[in-house]
Amino acid sequence: MSSFTHIGNIIESLIKDLSQKGFSREIKIGLLWNRAVGGILSKKALINKLENNILFVNVENSVWLQELILQKSKIIYRINKKLNHQDKIKDIIFSISAKRIHI
Image 1: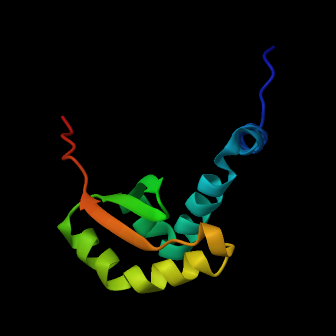
Image 2: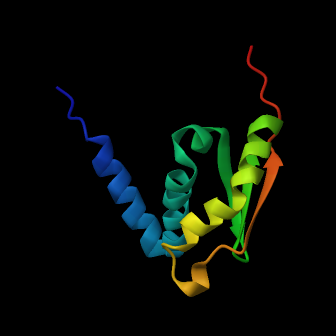
């Protein structure tokens, strides 16, 4: 009989491993992003990269892009209130991600 590992244990182990390798800031911002934008938007817009405290986000389409642009200052505020000074997000740049073709 095979033994299964709970997914929560795998994720916790992965986060600890990445944190030890210097990615704790990115992990924290990623988790804060999901909370700041909420469940629906977090599925429609994914962080692409974090560079010089600027968050680059790929958005599914122009409708969601417009929604995120309207909420941009609130999103930055929600993320930054949980970060220390040197990690604060200066800006978010949104772009429409490459089209996905489902066949």
